[in-house]
Image 1 (tube, rainbow, N blue to C red):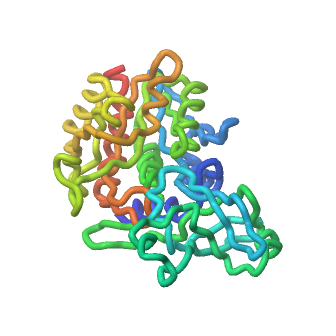
Image 2 (cartoon, one colour):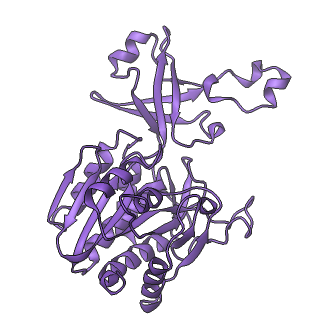
Image 3 (cartoon, rainbow, N blue to C red):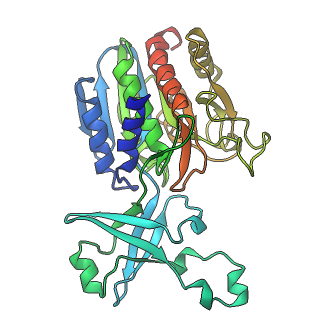
Amino acid sequence: MSGMRELLERLSNAVGVSGREDEVAEVVRAELQGHVDEIRRDAMGNLIAVRKGSDPSCMVAAHLDEIGLMVKHIDEKGFIRFVPLGGWFEQTLLNERVVFRTKRGPVYGVIGSKPPHLLEEEERKKPVKVENMFIDVGARSEAEVKEAGIGVGSVACLDRQVRPLLNERVTGKAFDNRAGLAVMIEAIKNTKSKHTLYAVGTVQEEVGLKGAKTSAFGLQPSVALALDVSLPGDYPGMEKKDSSLELGKGPSLTVTDASGRGIIVSEAVLRWLTETAEAHGIPYQLDVARGGTTDATAISLTRAGIPTGVISIPTRYLHSGVEVLDLSDLKAASELVARALERVGEYF
């Protein structure tokens, strides 16, 4: 499992905030080079790797981007005000360490706020709002911040590295969706599919499923798979009625998400994925999700409609710097995708 962990680590540790995904895209490009016929970036920034074959064609999509922060204002003392990019639970940001990737190299900072010692009693009872937070990079002036390569519109992400936990579990930032990218890469490397395959690292999923929409429109595949993460219900604060998914029990196959406002996966796609899993002894879990959606929603609604499925890795503490997953689920997901790509012609 070390190879899968090392791949996830390289992807997770890379910086790729929505709209600025180049560093992650280059990791994916390097991994897929030699396993596909061509690799290109489209006008939107999506990375598209093509393996030529017969019909039906299949698009495998995993988004490159992670939620992050963008500089809004730098004051005269060098403190940086920012806006969140993507779906942050804002109180998780306070006192985190962040990193800016600049032309001069990485610049580190911390997210601060008014100290609790000086808060009024009523203020103490309320979470600190993001508009009252700031980033401190150690500068003494606005000019020093700009000299370091940071300006209005610069982006930052959490400064977190992948670390091992017990039982082949790992923690890190941006497993949403570097886990999906790892699955896509391994599946493309290991599948013996004779069909045309499009492995797509999509951009700006966290801010509106944007890259999935444009790439699917351009490629017009016969069928598609979106690879992402899902919410398990196997830790305190969650109950089975919230989610029946568990770490270590295999990838999840979405039946519907966002209570049907996202995607409702067709019976044909579910049959393709479940029958493939059962034929190869690959564990899986079915997911009926109340909230959240993925690139699959945008892909499925492209042009006249594209049959689309979702294979996800159950991951705890999503949209934080301490996401947790089980490497066995990652491995099982890549095996399922690889085998499903070989059987796609039997179903579509």
